Length: 123
Image 1 (cartoon, rainbow, N blue to C red):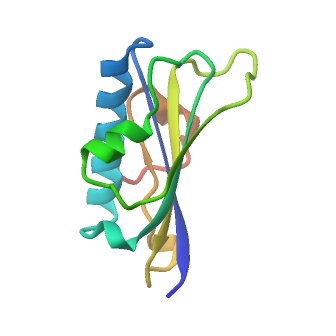
Image 2: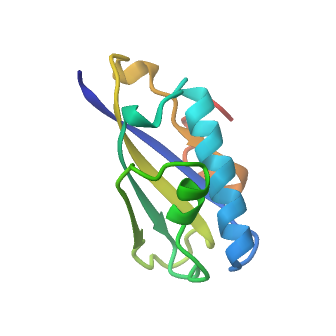
């Protein structure tokens, strides 16, 4: 079965643990819903990144709260590009699926919609 990448991003109103976790849960739920992912066994891994201004917690905690205890998760910091969107959480989910790349739904929520105006799915 092929492995496909699913991208997503969201914004966080402030650098707080609750804000990061709430936004990340919302993003994960929408990625799962939009791509009809019903079993976490289909998820190979998830890489989360945050802009350097988000340090209150790891976004991966939200995935654990949703029950992804066996999914390999990794958090990293984005490079500090001047004048870019602040307080942004991004994810790259690797997924075992027979779906073609054109059928994968990438999800951009909140202010992060502006990062990919070319992608209109799940927005």
